[in-house]
Picture 1 (spheres, rainbow, N blue to C red):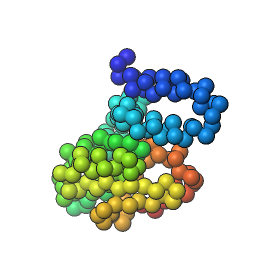
Picture 2: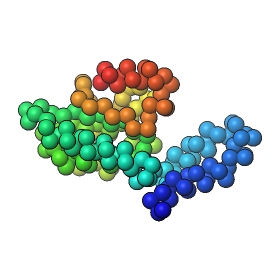
Picture 3: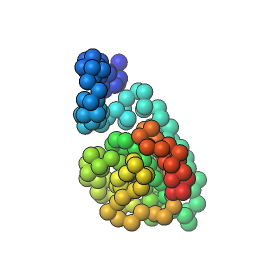
Picture 4: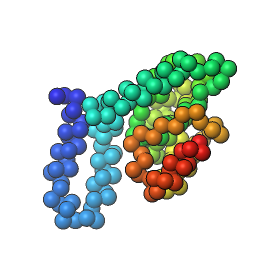
Length: 171
């Protein structure tokens, strides 16, 4: 199935290097970094069949929430994800600019490109997340609180998942 190709390419790379990585544990970190930087990995969370259903479900829930959201309130969404995200597009299309604040928190390696992609959206902010202490950093002011916090493919990267979940509740 062609839609699974990115997933299969990543699995193939891991399989091909597995004997070496098992014998050389010190090389694993650099190998994983290289995998994350690959162009195949960039589409992984968006289009791969293993993850597309979750993305579509999140988009559907956000559109549904937006359709019932009070007109006098801004919907404040924080999405923390490990790679590029198309999820904001669904909500940016569903709500006018004056009713939505969307913050997309990404690793620094991905943030610059997404910043360019969403530059024309004034109610969309790209932030970075420090996985050690779960603090957000952005060039512009972020909302003090969020109505929705989405953790996509990131909680397992937290030094302490408990700390991460507590911080997500405070947002």
